[in-house]
Structure formats: structure tokens, C-alpha cells
Length: 99
Image (cartoon, rainbow, N blue to C red; front, side, top):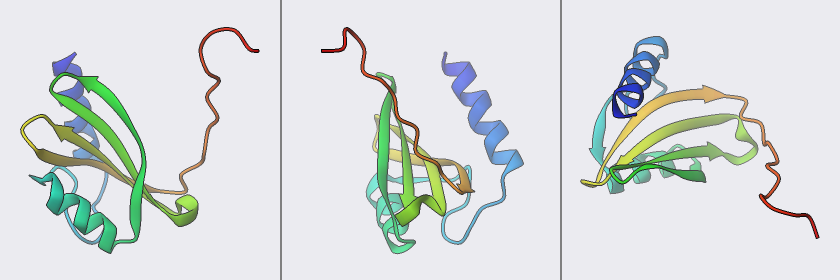
């Protein structure tokens, strides 16, 4: 799983050009990355568990015009893995029986 994540991060870094601020593929302490994204008018939109070593977060601007995908590592470093535009909301049904 780790090798797949690393390959995905490298592929994203090689394919996407960075927007202003921190570059795709660059890592920095999480508080610095979060502050830079806040300055870019992006807020945490969603977060998910990847492994005991990492979380995957999506930051987005109001309305989803711009977004940034970040891997947050257990050592406190965050790495920008992708940037894009036109983020769309997807509704995910909860697991289990509907009441």
C-alpha cells in the first residue's frame, strides 16, 4: 500500500503544475501548509485515514473553485500531492440499514 501511495504522489507531482504558494510535491510542517492554504482562501473540506502513518486531506475554496490535496504524515509533515479546479461535492450513503 505504501508503494502505491508513493507512486501516486510522484505521478501527481509530475503531472500537475503548482498554483501560487507551495509547490506540488513539496513537504513542510503541517501548520505552515495549513496557514498557506488559509491565505489562499482554502479550508479543510474532508479528511480520510490512509494508514497509521498518514491522513489524506482535501482543502478547498468556497464553492470548490480551487482545491489542494495534502498527505499529512505522522511526523507532522504535510505534502501537497495535487491541485485542481472545479471540485464537486459527492454524497456518500452511510453504511448499514436505512431507518
